[in-house]
Amino acid sequence: MRWSYAGLTGIRLSYDGAPSACVTASLLDLRDRLTKQYAKGLTDCVLGYRTLTLFFNPTELSREALLAAIGDLDNIVGSQQCAGRAVELPVWYAEESGQDLAVVAEHSGLSVQAVIELHSGNQYTAFATGFSPGFCYLGNISEQLDMPRLQTPRRAVPAGSVAIADRQTAVYPAVSPGGWHLLGRCPLPLFDLEQSPPGLIAVGDQVSFKPITRDEFLSLGGTL
Amino acid sequence: MNGLSVINPGLLATVQDLGRIGYLGHGITTGGAVDAFSLRCANRLLGNTDDLAGIEIVLAGLTLKTTCDLQVSLCGAPVTLHINDEQQPIDQPLYVEANSTITIGRTLTGTYSYLAVKGGITTPAVLGSRSTVIREGFGGLNGQALQPGDLLPVADLPVPQDVPKMRPRGERRQRDETQLHTDILHLRFIPGMHYDEVTESCRETLCEKTFSISGAANRMAIPLSGNPIDTGLTKLWSEATCLGSIQVPPDGQPLVLLNDRQTMGGYPQLGVIIPPDRVRLGQARAGQMVKLEAISPITAEQIVWLHDHYEETHLKALTSLGNTAL
Image (cartoon, rainbow over all chains, first blue to last red):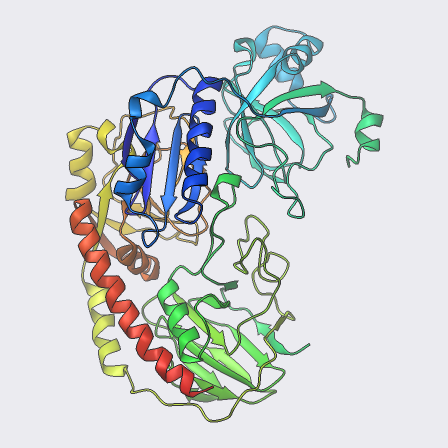
């Protein structure tokens, strides 16, 4: 790993290899150790696919002390396994809920049913949270489903939309603009300020998708 | 319930405090006053603590009506302030009777000004902050900018009519304005993040050319336009953004990220502008010429330390004044 400045009150740790569940687990371990040690001094810790950016309050914690606590950069990524929770999200996959199913099927040379089976047949690591509150970047999806983003993003993607882009998949927590291909809809709220933490998925979680019917979608609280 | 009734929100006015700290890891941005120092000054003039929420006004046009007696103060961009058609000084604590009209008029320089009230605006706090982030739908009243007809609740405190007077700052302010308007604004930054991965010629374009603020600035980012910067980096893995980051999208026109930025980004970030220069940039207007300058972290630390010291000294003076109003 390497470190660089992220302003005067931030440190960015980055890993040069490919992102993986192991890299995420290692960064999570480090984050948890440091937040325990510096509950007051660290204000924010943000995991990216292969980065951990630490923001600190300079009146409580110095950069030198933080770097010393991080220790040997070469020993951060090891043989850690992802120890996140298993989260299963119900998804109503259909033309009505996932406008791009047919396009993705055509692009990948598969049937719509095969696309659904491929997408729901895997477990994904939550690599990062961001873009909007509760939005989680999940990966990696099958190479067969690897598709570039839409040329022109949609102005409004419905809340709960399950989408793919490149080797990633995600659920849009709220209505927002979006350039990913839509496969279906999840009826569960991905983000709820009344909950602690407010996001349903946390970095490191192992996420899977379970196909449900339109009726099940509605009975689980989904809205059309 | 008593407080401030919104007659006309003007261009854009939002409830802001010092921001939502500690939730970047959940994808929740900080928000908060772009010019936090000005909000703190406005609070101190009234004997408020720094963390109380006020109204951030973009440029002009806000008109409010008081539904109870209040003490208010206005700091930041040198806007005109009228209370019931009578012009009043900014940077002063002011006593305002119930049923008065407060109007924020034009300013020739600067962008953000802050109206504080004694005891603060008391809209519900969300995750420890009242700051409005419109994109996320959090904070303020229902997560939105001020709308005509809104009633902003205010802390129920005794409001003495006697308020202390400050020495007028008019002359100094005018000099500051002229400088801001005509000079090139220097933005000093600490290189970092993807800076080591770009070519020497990319760094030269970044630091040797002059850019200007293009028209589309907002609370998320200030776009700069000039010679395109070719970072040569594509397909980056998404990672944390920083307040003040210089982010370079594929079109080569840099963006300086502000308070309402998205917490993650997939474009190269070449460094972080030091806080005092970031706030000056935030207050600047479209067309302002800017030049980026890479400085060492040690130099940055010295500049920021001195600047913080200056701000603290100024705030302490306002506090002793504000407290006499208690």
